[in-house]
Length: 201
Image 1: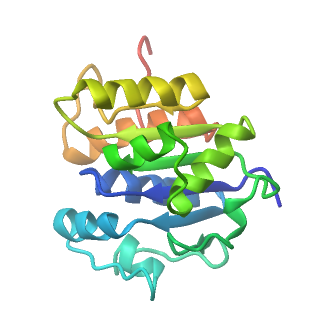
Image 2: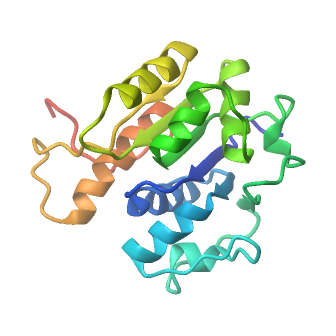
């Protein structure tokens, strides 16, 4: 298994456009992406993007949209309760994992090593194998429990990258704001992109 492979999990926080756009960018960069979604993620996707994704009958076009180019062989989907999936094992090599968006419940499960579903387990694997794990929470305000959970994840080796768009880039559209966050995620994963204007350039 090539270490260029990446894992993308989407959970039930607001911010589905970030996850979908990230998937588009990773595929255009030629990366193979292993995808898993929580049930709550499908509800958020429908609310924010008007797209209905079925966990038991997953179709990439349902997630990316009817007009999207659907690549062959670049995306591998796993049901969120499939512990037999390769990504549940440390022997399955990847170049990193991102949970985007990352709900506070998912973050808590990772912080406390619960491994209650495949998303938790794959994240736990990345921590124990010392691989890149990027968590993208979208919540405000934050209570002390959530802050402590974020601290625990960072101390365990994860990168917590809140979905906080910048304004020094002078975003003109919602897509510009989304691309800023997606670009910062790609920076953490080592994926080249031209999604944002760098400070000082």
